[in-house]
Image (cartoon, rainbow, N blue to C red; front, side):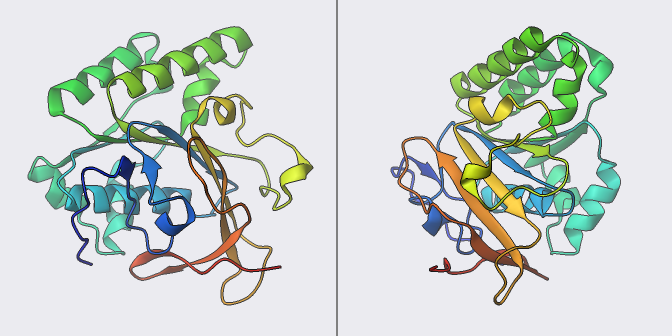
Length: 241
């Protein structure tokens, strides 16, 4: 799929995921930190890979940091949608790297160096929940490190997506409460929170996506149906209740 070049003056970073940018005034805020969260199999990684592929098509350099995925399998899965990250890596347009969380305090500094060295403009960290587990017995340390990471990425001007997995299914009822990540912290640090759902609203597709919050943005409030096709994710028109 050919992606149109984006305007540089908009202050927005379009995802070019069909239907998504219309939900949030044209896309993510440039240089923001954004959380994509939901239960197992809701499409979080597909959303991030599609965003990354579209950003590269618009001339952005991208970095994908994984703490738990087999990167070879991940790149292979992306090819099912026509996203050839192996080729893009060889061309020096993106980098896929994996870290073990036990790497310790030097971990953040290591991939911050990569961001500056490679001129990275788009970053995916999949998943932030695994990184947070390094500090699961020290809540204060966990909160501090996540704030430092988020603040550093913003200062570097990188538009970032964190993924987080929750147990079960994210509620479609905004008033239901409950954590939106395993640590329960990152959703408060992030500039936006996107929740993904396997079921709940019926219609053409029984998947849904919701922009739960997005700072400095007028956005669609409710859950919106989506489908996953051979070309990737497509957000459908909002359902009126």
